[in-house]
Image 1: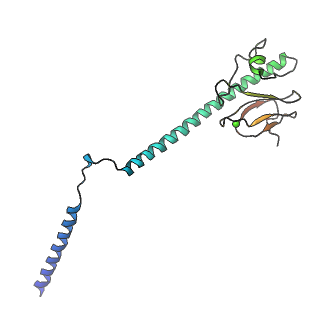
Image 2: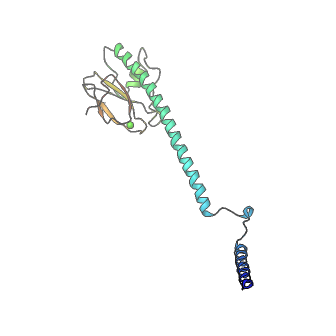
Image 3: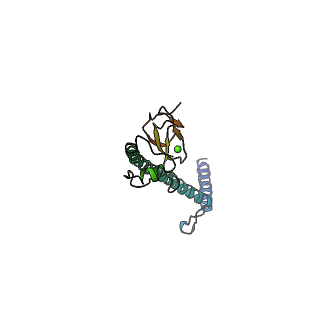
Length: 180
Ligand SMILES: [Ca+2]
């Protein structure tokens, strides 16, 4: 009886072993050197590359915007100094007209601005925008800002800005606040 049980167990183990060997022999050995990338792997890698490139572009644009904001602020301060000098030299009248910068400031006698300055957020060689209130008391000089679109539209007789308070970079002798 005991011998029969042992014989059955041995037979069972042999059977299990055969099954394991059989399944092991079904595994195809990997040959990494000859194996290419699958389509899924390629898509995955390309996806990562696209994400990394996207992040780089966004960061570079942010750095470029920051640099242009600093340029615009510096330019606007220089223009404001010139506008105030023009005002003193011209019987308390601010520059006017489309040639406010090219003629009144950069071509004045005495010249109060070394050269015409351009808005870095607009097409090449496009000047900053400038507006004087109806009564001639207030002015605003502004850049379109990172969205490259005009938000400020002018300045009223109370020194309040008109238009949208968005991302335009401006300098003014008014209140610096927007008409609500
Ligand atoms: Ca803007």
